[in-house]
Amino acid sequence: MKEADLLRLEHNDMKMIRWIFNVTLKDTKPSLELKKRLGLDSNSIRNCIRRGRLRWFGDLERCSDDSTVKKCRK
Image (cartoon, rainbow, N blue to C red; front, side):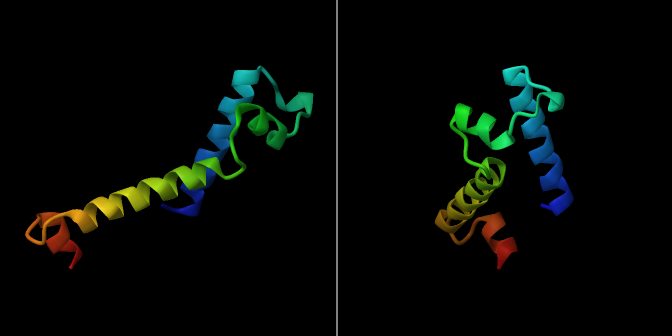
């Protein structure tokens, strides 16, 4: 994933969090405070993507050696 795509996801995530709390940028509420109120960490999108990649890698490693995806990887 490109850094620009990741930044767009993070921007959209923050917009949705502000929408949930009905807070605009003019209200000057800190982003970290809003994320804490939802129980999210500051890098929640990056961590979610990393977990998904690691889960897919684990699935790939557990595949049999004759699977097409594992053959392509090698």
